[in-house]
Image (cartoon, rainbow, N blue to C red; front, side, top):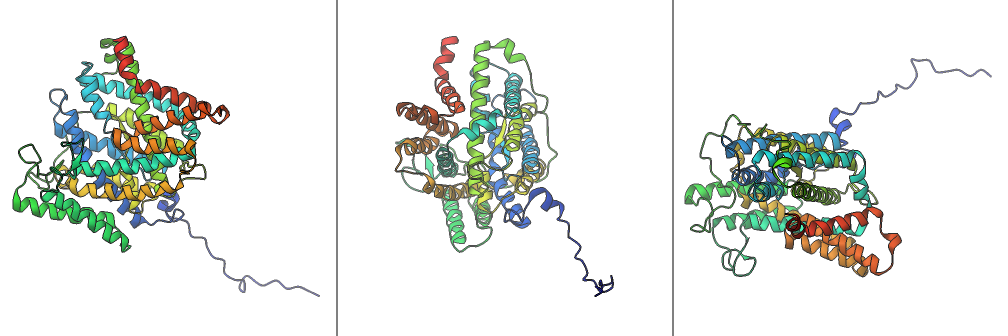
Length: 484
């Protein structure tokens, strides 16, 4: 029996495989359950949640800036470095995490290094640069990633939850809803919400909540835009102006009004304002080493906590609580300190405000690229960026705090060995106003409990190192006075 083979004319046509687009190959958008529109929207939300840094970094560093460097130049330099580093994070690490000049680190430059130790602006930036080089080396050798993976899973969850409370607290403070008062903090002014800015925040937050529960896409971004439009109208009619002792119901960080041309050529005179070795010559070497150590430790663990929180919110963590491409994430973050020092705008670090974009649906590095492009654009249109008041942007932080808080169910509260360190980690972040402090307290208490229970085998060698380093970190003041 002869078997006949179908001729080429009668064969079923073969389907030509469709090559994925460059965006799909680079960012794996569909694989992570997202869309291009969702990523761009998330990047927009992250940018508006972070845009305040352009004003705040300029105001803090401007107190000690050298002659010829204006606050406008610091803002432009801040935008440039943040834009470049955020784009690198998106492309190299494919993670929805944006970077900018770190709050707390910029304050250390101004109040500790320059005003406290008497260093020049350039010498302070030199220390920022060398801290970045050192932490980059730790990443390249795998040490930083190894420390991250040694952290117990329950503590990683607690870090995410604590950061949720921390960013909600930041949002409430930035919006003026929570303020210092007769007690350490209080609601509004003497226990009452007072003034149009408070109304703008409440309007934006409630609108965001309503849109979210009704499953409206873009709820967070719509809330920011709507409350910004309302703020611009209010300012145009009332002429409130900025908040001050004489004007407690004024706007917080930004006044929502355009007072100059919306387009300006950026001044990048902060670049090159660095003295690489001056601090080692003009300050006691022990003090310099301890300062670099404190900068490194803050940078080291802040980013660890932030990337876990972002990864958890985006559902990107593996079974061990680790995000994808963690070494690349840590590498780009470490280089943020290097370029922040070179750019004369302080150390750049991963921003927990990226969680606002993740809450809007961001799952890939395309969101970080979007944020980075907007930072670069803001170099030229800073007046437009400054229209968004903190009262509008803070609605995203407070709402995303709720989303991150839901992870608290993953902690085993019936096991005190894990529950107590987790509780203290969560509590200390907002109470001490520091992610690093919360992580450090949690690490030390977990370590002490394991020692007390005789469970030495459960303590990873790197957790020993981390706990001891945190003890040194928390006692830096007495140590520095001892060697002064």
